[in-house]
Image (tube, rainbow, N blue to C red):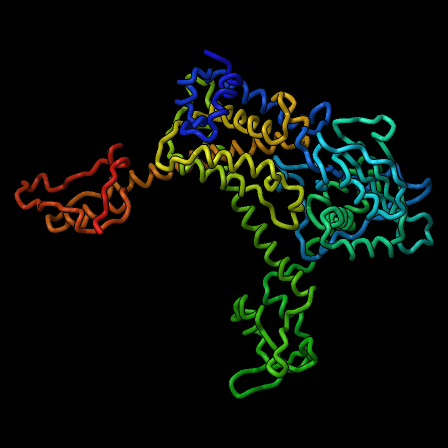
Length: 557
């Protein structure tokens, strides 16, 4: 036997070839040791959540990493009090709970700024003192590197009404031609609340401004919990005071539906007009015109589409048309997405528990194997990745590893490797996890330009290994569920396919062929009657054979 790493290196050259290098049967024929694969997975699992001791960048890296730290209490003047904004839209949001969304995906507050050149071709820029926060950050696009933006908002005195914002930018440039004189630099700036508001307004569509703002105003569960965590480390009393104040705000005025949003926008005049058929409530619309509508009909009978397209009958201006309206509608949709995520999360718990019990067995020589079509395993990979997408109020999309370019490249390569739709492949728990991890490592080596597999995870974000592990584990859980579901459906079909009457034979035969082989013309299915069969043999069971799945018949045109 050869080592799994060496064999995978040789097999990796066949990414575009016919060989499915994720199939444990193919791996065994290539003399890859299954025990070594399982051990590699276990080693990877143990170290997945441990940050690397050093951070590097690959030769192909063409971005600058900017990490936001807020609140950074080291920047506060002596005697000042920290100023924390009320969490954005707290009245319509659920109270954030630790562990509800971030079990395997708790990254840094980081944004990647595209640079003009990669590490190999970039040079360290000459130091320039900047007086604007925007200019300080914009300068980072000159070359790859690591930067940390420390931020704090504070009240210097008890008489201060609006907070002051202090920023400190620490930068370490990373290029192929290091210059110790300019390699590291620090810049600081302080702005008023009005200036900070202007930065947020003008940079509303800029990635780093959006991330910074969502963290400062705690617009997501992620940012709220991160800020609370830092506050607890600095001053437990400050953290407890903020926690108590925020808990009374969260979910105090939820928006149950878009009908509720429309009702809020239509100001009630406090009077009712009795009509012949029913009582009508009189509302004043945003355009100033009055409108008669039965409130029960508005809240219970109108569809979401009706509410979104509702217009003033006089001037035809849409009732829901302002930014505030759109934010409220988005909050309704987000709450719906959160509810869906919670239900899905419970399903993942049950499916994972079954997978652990039935498949993840030690030692690997006795581990459960199962067979699955390449197209189904491909679907499992894609859908497992999608399952890590979170609602907008849970985590900013910019920092979710599921959307990282590296993740997309790994996913695309896996899909390419599984191009033979109906070809079967064998999956074996920990060994397949080892194959998937080795596959991802090879892809990342090519993508980043790093030659040594051991250094791959030093050029990726600290928590990225944990995400990759969770993604592949969910892939196997979903693949196993798909196989078991298919087996259950076939078993149920076999139980139901007993011929009671001779006249039903043709119908049942066609039903079976359609279900197992796919829909086709009736003329292709020719069955005889069972008129000469003795009475005691009129119940004829059908047992699916492996050849049924491989049979291909030409459809007559």
